[in-house]
Image (cartoon, rainbow, N blue to C red; front, side):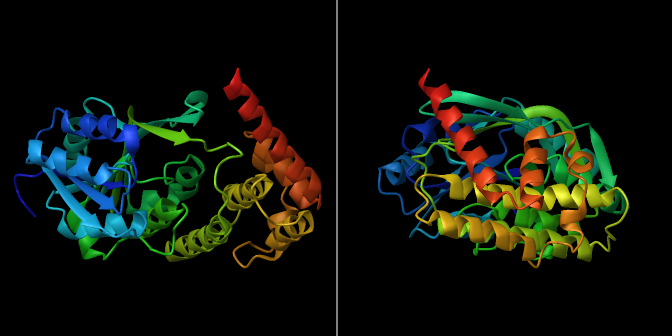
Length: 353
């Protein structure tokens, strides 16, 4: 670890096109100057590789790794091996750091002496370069010790705090001492929740900040032109297992009000898989889709009581998810698919206006 480098920011790059400039410059222009930016060119074919080298030639804080395409987890792991900073941050190649992020986050995590710090993020869902939805996370300025992490794990999961890595800083020595890295099984999402569950089972302290510092762009996330990928379905079930294992490692018994949280968390992955199958580009027959949804009721990661929980009690704060759970619980799988298709169509119509 280089004592002069306070934060190493890891950014996998793959065919970033026009978005790379904003992402890179939002990091290099941060008020905290003792940083390094590790750009991992993951086999780009659109000229992004050359642009990475140009940034490195202009700014000595930029380090470039060129490699064959291995996916985001492989790229991040490659960067973790050479990172010299005291803390690790992450960014996607088409996102944006807001001013003051690194300086304020570094000051806070060092003051708290925490293993992990999370700050707020803003997500912009884009369709044909039009913002069709905006979401923000809301956190308090708080620090959790190991026992408090265990006591609040369901609220953290349910509040989307453990959803991604690019809205946080992570102590490098903590990551290395616990041999924490990304599972390269994940090729189509889910890798962040997976590693964060590992991190939370090992962390002795965890801090949160109430300021929005990161902008995440979800491009064509609801478009029918989005590529359908079978591995996304596999990911949904794998994540369900990982969360179950993580709760077990923390020694948490699922009882009382915790049942509500677990039910909502688990069903979010079934919901995600159903949304994927509702995509017109999914080549499964209608019968195959209905059978796959039905099989989720027998998934190993689901508790035996999963379908006996009250829809209203669990999802009173999320009407859309509550309706979807009600349909799933009562075997109304055709209606589930129809609902997701309608939502996708509404998104596209909104983008065309």
